[in-house]
Image (cartoon, rainbow, N blue to C red; front, side, top):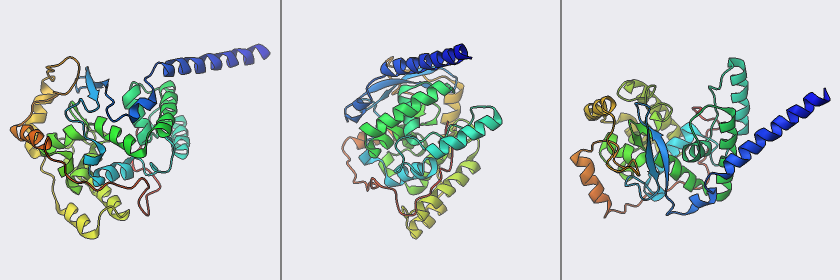
Length: 312
């Protein structure tokens, strides 16, 4: 029995040592605080192939926090991680519930990841569904919370989330679907993009399940109204608006059927063909500096206490 306990102890020690060594090989989390920080990560296209993707100002679609509408930030926070301004990188209650669910189902289907954890995974880790990755994710999320502001974390998150076939980040997504810069997004459009996040490839792909995306975006608009982000008039106006994404169907079909062609081996900044509208918009952005109302670094009143979706 003593030998068995010793072996178990040694195995656990070796496992923890492995995790510590692998974490020591990742870039310092403190580097993310630098506004000029750039790094290259790998993202997957819809054919399963990986491509380099630049994270930071060198990416032409990079959108600084000041140019992301407050409604976009709150739409994501209230729908994906209602306790974002309360936790320190991970949600203990959500993790407990996820562990219970996974044990009952004998799977790793429920991850209970916070926005910070998802950001850590996207920037530093692979997409494998393992306990090792989850432990690394939690540690890195905790370190990010110590080194970065909540605003900086949500900035990274919104600039790397997947929103379509080789469409990563709010800067690309807003142009891809609506032909405009993020600062011009309406509350309905913000809610629409946020609604896609749990599964832009299938479950919440607007070209396959538009009704499902609209239903979820209505729910998100309701959360924005409930938490005081939108006034009653703004809420009703948003509900009455129908996002015009149908014009993008031909483009989406073309990208899905033909793998994207990259003109630069060092980044994924030219993922999909662009319309003339998108190109003209980029030229305008170089001179425009629109004022954007930012959410406070604290949650709005009557903030929802439970995340509406669970990310792995």
